[in-house]
Length: 344
Image 1 (spheres, rainbow, N blue to C red):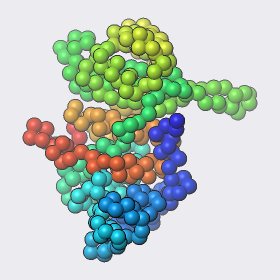
Image 2: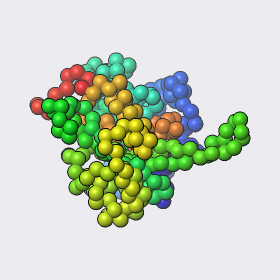
Image 3: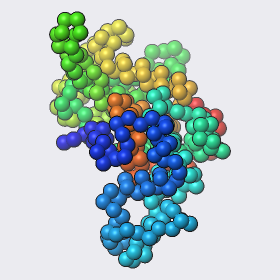
């Protein structure tokens, strides 16, 4: 079975107008106005031509310059919106602004904060920029994404994001537990001096999830949803991983006892992903709210799993954005958690 990330890597390389590498000038030429964006979005939604949702008629629809987002069926006159059911559904923001936001989120190496997006795209209200980013983040993970661990062994660990340790007591913390699973792939590298080929470890796909607590029950639920049964897993010997062997996984627990050097040697890819994740959150967003943390984890996972295919990430994000409407304004903001200053 082809994985979702591999599918995304292959998307558009033949049929899409996107080239293997698209820079800012290329993007601007491809999408100079809203009409070009709508045409591209229409091809994503109906790759074989417009099909009426009402009568299933396949034909060129009626188009209106007054209502460019609406396509009218020639057979039954049913009107379909190009943006209906997408993250842009009923948005008053220009589709061109949405495309630029998707491009910046998917291709900008350090990511982009809502405050910076507002500045770059001239969005009048901060809340609008914040909601656009969260809708795009909500589109970054497929509800039916495949499990990892089928072909490659995994490293697994639970880390803590944000907050502080309470009263300086080990194990007592206000931080949010996040579980990380990383594929350990191997690639062949030729030494230019000796001409010998050696295999080096490479971090493959990752899965990230915010946990309600650091318990075996929470870990078991994550593993069941994200990791292939019988997969080879290496972790520390914490009690949260005690059920993995009885659940049929090839689990190798290693005592760490808080030894960071040993942790880095034993779980090097987890250490790498953890460092990158924390640097990204602190550097780009200066911290995030607990309520929105999973959305940021989804963005990091999307970007990390497609880091070698940035040009295709834009097409992938728009494709995924046609599958759901994303979070609502009320879900992003509420009376008890109203953001007025960046993501902090």
